[in-house]
Length: 182
Image (cartoon, rainbow, N blue to C red; front, side):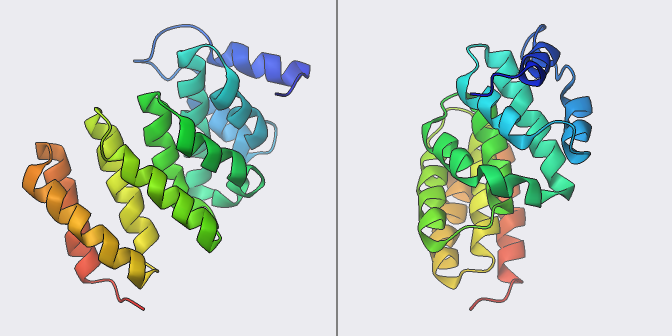
């Protein structure tokens, strides 16, 4: 865990309020994009803060910063995969699912990610399930073997998911049908 003053300042920026608000996550995301806050500090906050609000806001800021700059995840790839496997907080899980397709993964790392994301399909949170399904489809777009594995998961979500999951799974399946396979 980082011990410098900037890390303490970062934690303070994320503190306060409740899980229904984003606090300074948008501003911190911009700071990450500009290089004034490190992705490593955000991952440390996600992994070790005792405050669920801080963990959630750190995940939100990192997810937002890496939409346009996925390369920022490269130095923290292993840590993110570890969190993907161990996180139990729903907000962390859905943000980790959103970031996973942005990672450049080896075959073994992709297998770890897929196993974790499949586990997320049993999460009580519909958002976690939906984001996990979305991430699995994104990972499968360039991997024919994985695409064959993910299609039945889409069909299952269409048949038995929440209304939001069914709608997303239908859209994802339509996108899958038009995506060329290896």
